[in-house]
Length: 203
Image 1 (tube, rainbow, N blue to C red):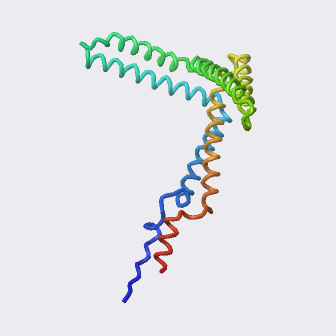
Image 2 (cartoon, one colour):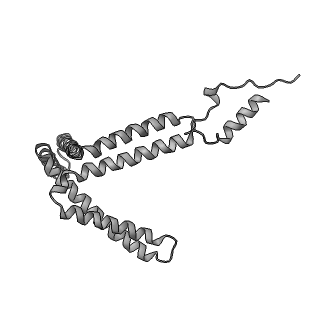
Image 3 (cartoon, rainbow, N blue to C red):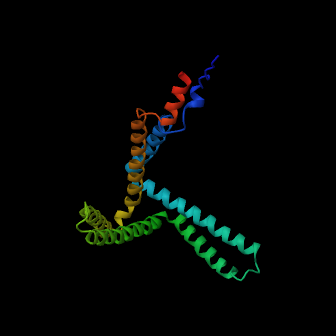
């Protein structure tokens, strides 16, 4: 007398994969994309908000440095903790009182990154000449250099929109790609383990 295994319920047999959770992933991607779109539409407000948040974090970090000093006053590095705390707290207060100054500083950092990254990518592309698609590295580096020069040439007016726009575009692209990936995976073939368990339950 043979016995057949009882079929497991969907909640027990379904694996925790993107195919079974694609709705949640797509929803999260859509929310991120909407936030990115709002940031793109209001880049100045976004940039000011980012600068303000950085100021809050710096002020909190400065106070933490001071707390560390009072907790370990006999520590040989206490004087350096005090210096770091004063500098960090001062930078945070400046950003809170004048977040536009923070925007200019962040824009300068972005410009430096684009210029250095562009030079490195161009040098890498030249080094890889002869390899498949080697020119893409040079093209990417040239675009980075062009963006860096354009932002530098437009200072300080570019600081009004650059950080917020770049942040928004990043969220928009990330959220859209997440939603597309999840939506494409909903009709993908189920995992082999799930197929085997389904076949075993039907025997």
